Amino acid sequence: MGNSRLVYSTDTGRIPATPDSRDESRESGDGTIIISRQSKGRKGKGVTLISGFQLPASELKQLAKTLKQNCNSGGTIKDSHIEIQGDHREYLVLTLQQLGFTTKRSGG
Image (cartoon, rainbow, N blue to C red):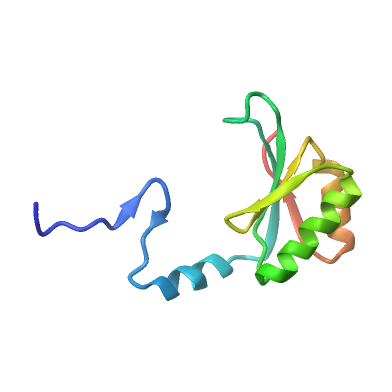
């Protein structure tokens, strides 16, 4: 067992060989923004999750600020996902499409 090494974890998925490849995999994708609602682990209070961005951190932060202001709600950025308090899926789909993003709703 001393020769075994972790190649997959349910927490983070496939573990890259070098830290640099993790950054590349985070930015890769099909360019579709996924908008979903989640309430698990938040004592029943729902948040709208927006993921799939291929933006630098500074642009992502500015976009999150704009979306939060337009929704009149709070939120944060975690692991390159934007979380906005409350259920704003319909509004965010329209807003992001107007900004030129390809969007897709996930979940009910």
